[in-house]
View (cartoon, helix red, strand yellow):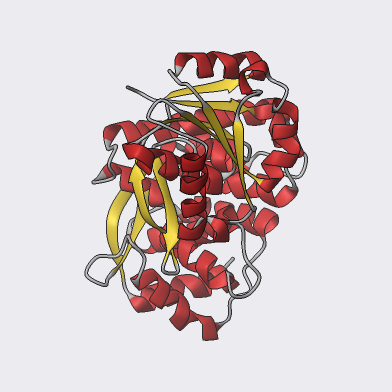
Length: 349
């Protein structure tokens, strides 16, 4: 059954309808502390949720781990969850990833609804069926593919996000634009993130989700073309993990920096237009800055890329573009090329 995604301007009634369409005899809500404070406080009085059991996880991707997963399983077990129970994942990507994995594995699978509360989760983590946790110092090392029965998006919540959260999600939208068309990319780099037009942003979110789903539907298990959605993530994941022992970067900021590196390599190797690469770099510098990476960090970053799950036989693998909407997957990147791209990230125009 194809995943249903609803962009809602009548959130309470739309959520009630989604719940009624999912056979269940009990509801468990998994949420992070921020979503509990800002979103669950609005939802707790909904008639359909008055008997729901709430499981709260402390904010932060560092909590997307085996310990918290075990805790969620234990709460489901103690709460009497069975194959007919319904899980609602209310939160950002950490919650939709961990909560989806908990639901997909408890008693061999419970139905779940994703209710993303951050822009990043709306356009990326909550759609497409990827669930999982971090393990052994690596992001998303353990997981499975399992679609939520429904994804319901309340775009009013965007106005509650701080600047970093908003920009973090927007980086994934920028990636989707590059994977779609020059027209879509131009709208994204022309959008004023410092003073968002919320109505326009909602339309762009819907377009971004549809771009992602177009790739997902062609390759649900990420054997081929869906790998294109990893654009920016070979360098981005390494930068994100490198930052954890320093000043942790939001996921989307790291992806934005990864896009700079991989677009730079695309201009050198696969013919992506230099002018549009430079315009993207200027946009990233304006709204995301530059990471505090030094030459002394290169060995660590390159090692992280070698250990990334996208690597093959120890070789760094990346997605490059030959043009807008023309990704080339499984491209080997040499260590010196990686260092050159990091040089450009730090110092390029």
